[in-house]
Image 1 (cartoon, rainbow, N blue to C red):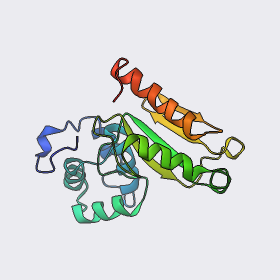
Image 2: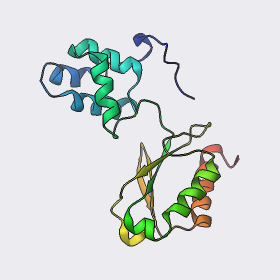
Image 3: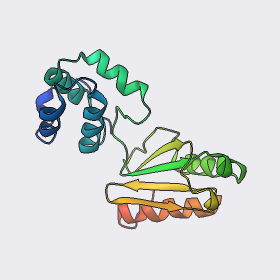
Length: 174
């Protein structure tokens, strides 16, 4: 569930970002580093975080939004617990990545950049995961690490998603 954008900065604790801001707030050209650190800490760049960074650096919120929306690495909304990075590289494309992606999107009921209602999965199309010998491939990223699944078929990817959801819901699948 997305956070209400009409919240105040006092609702998010920015103490973990303080060391980064102390080090970089007055360093010209360091906005990307600050945004990367904020996203690493909080998972995404909330409106509160952007206004807090603006307050501490003197950079206008509009400029911060401009940078955050220009670079694909930044997210302005929370992502699911499991980020599904769906490879769209040449080897994956040739080996049926479009069918795998279609199966994932149909099974979860979401598209690129969207998160399931239960907050478990977010889909992200990526240009290449560098695992061409495993094509088609999907990487599943969590705060605990990442796991790569290769040589995917529609049935195999659906089984992987069902197994993850089952773990998260204690055996109850949607």
